[in-house]
Length: 76
Image 1 (tube, rainbow, N blue to C red):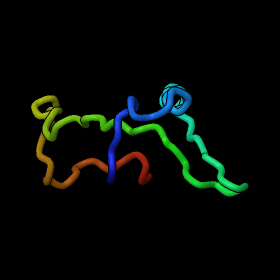
Image 2 (cartoon, rainbow, N blue to C red):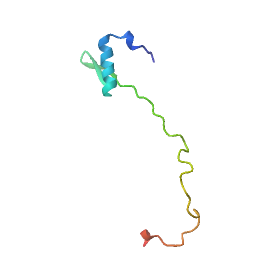
Image 3 (cartoon, one colour):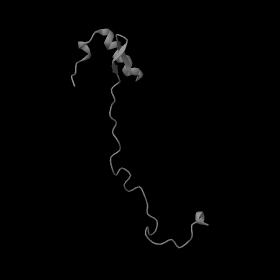
Image 4 (cartoon, helix red, strand yellow):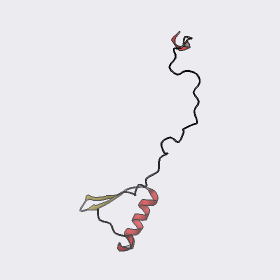
């Protein structure tokens, strides 16, 4: 993908691009009554929580694989 800086563009385009970024709304450029290009605001990647972030915060109460001695209320 080709890249250029905003300094290489006319001031009117720079203003439109800043508006697209500010409002997060796409801009459609029309040529001879038909859409030519659609300009979208750039999406910045957000970092997700690393794996294991909750490690050590849980607690195991009793045996996880033992049969249940008491019937569940929802089954009655």
